[in-house]
Image (cartoon, rainbow, N blue to C red; front, side, top):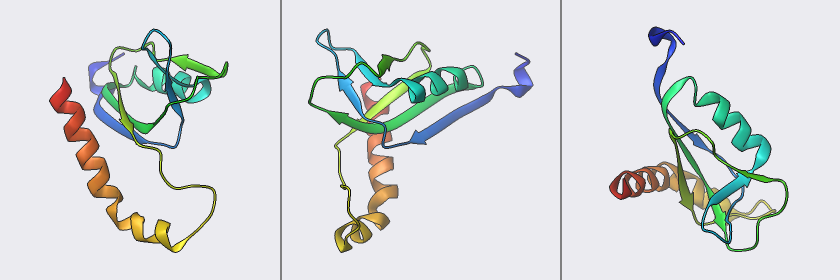
Length: 108
């Protein structure tokens, strides 16, 4: 790819569930992981901020293949209903993202 077409970094915030495999690898929903692996060709670095779950991964998951994708785990939150609590949390999202990215960069 031509150097001028490659962009520096991308942060993706999603609700894509991620899990740890028995050997400690992180896996996520395969269609999202596949798309991010493709986008990794266009960016120097991709941060994927998404929830990590404690339960066993299902068969629709895959591991990231691109080395320039950094998964930033966050605690699952929210739920399936709309409530006043979610409206209260909305203004806190930018702070939550900054905290997660800083924590991720400190671990590198």
